[in-house]
Image (cartoon, rainbow, N blue to C red; front, side, top):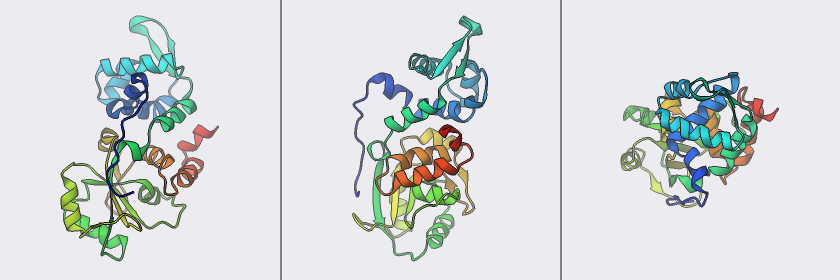
Length: 239
């Protein structure tokens, strides 16, 4: 898996638009907040997501055409209801693949323990510039279901990779790698919703972690299903 992965999607524009970086914040809000509301407006969602009315309007139009949203009222009094949250999540799973959408680098590390890696990041004031991802995020959230001991990190700044390589003494490794650095596709979600875990490193939100793992080749589907069955919010999508 060594190298960079950034494959352009062949999906029609109507799909690519709603699963793009900023648009994904709207999907995130709908699945975690809107799902529990009877009605909501475009203006309300734009304000809570800190996005333009125009963007929310365009995404809502597509979601309504696809049958995920129901419309109540007309013109300025128009409200919406998320009528099909389970299928919306499944559609997002089908339209996003971390291997296709993100640049990924794999390494070996001279450090013997994860704790030493995290300590080194903190000592170099990098703990808020990286985010635990994939299996590392699942473990930090208490949902570890594999014997993998790799460390997967999103890097929040493009030119940060070289600095991390130097600080962690990383060497590129194609097989048997121990650390993965990932340039995120959904950077806006990470910026808005990542929170520190007990290691003081930022952790990817559980919904994005689930989506990342669904298409990840190294025991990702297994770990994703485990999260879906146990997380108190995500497991509601199984009903």
